[in-house]
Length: 132
Image 1 (tube, helix red, strand yellow):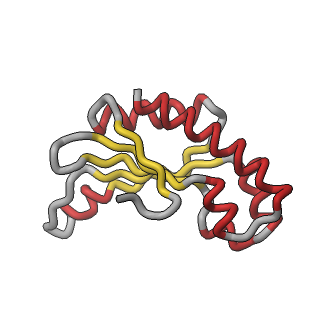
Image 2 (tube, rainbow, N blue to C red):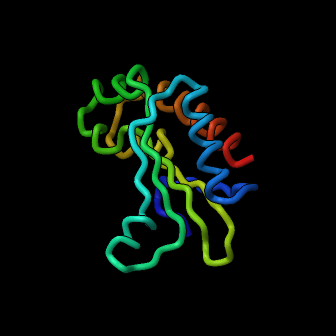
Image 3 (spheres, helix red, strand yellow):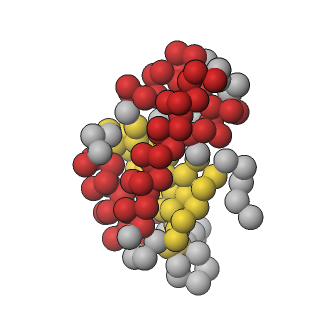
């Protein structure tokens, strides 16, 4: 069962190839790649094990700022993030938070929902391409 607002799709590739494809898609869509957090690497540094789990943080100020102008608390959920992870069976998954859910979560006005819906469509296409 997924957490509320989280969308997850299966990748046709392993984690490293999926991450490479996701980076390529982010940059080819004119988005900024802000950071990557490799949770498995961080776990290993404290002598713990974790299956591959990498969060990529990315975004576009033109879209995100519109949401934050409507309600600054949206900044808690932006920039966008995607989690590339491997499950116990070795299958790779990409999870991300639905921008429309973010808009509803913060009670944004109806006029801003169009921006969130466009973000949702673009993000779904980008993640879909990265997943293969």
